[in-house]
Length: 205
Image (cartoon, rainbow, N blue to C red; front, side):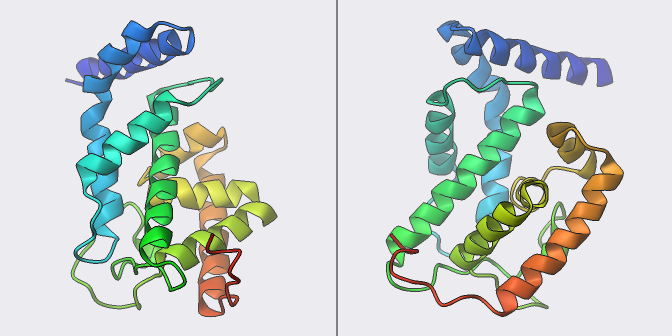
């Protein structure tokens, strides 16, 4: 079973590299291999959104995949690298969706899922107040400007649901560094979300 999984991972990597090299047929072979995991990432994102979200996981997967197909010049290193970029695209799609749906208002809140719960299965809504999707994205963009590594760690762990080891692989750093940057990033984001800046009309365009 482990060998079969390794073979599947290698096949995805080979197809990604063939796709980058201009083999359009590789894309047709790739989609069935990555669709289920893309759907899992989409479901994880939407589980953090407010109840009754109008964007469904299948639509999110399809839009993200179209954006991935349109990527130019990406050096696809592995299947984990592919899913990391997919997670980034899904984050952008959901934030854009929230801004369009709530123009001039605060974005739809995420379910009551603290930053500490990244990578875990969401439980009953309890504990911390829900996190505003647009406010979290704004704070994360500020963190990315201050410390790109911490920004990517948050995106991959919280949004993408990658493990510490997978995040380390994508960022080419040690698991210990991921854990340290994750702790620091969470503390910074929690402070930023407690005292968010007043958004200007430009921010919501």
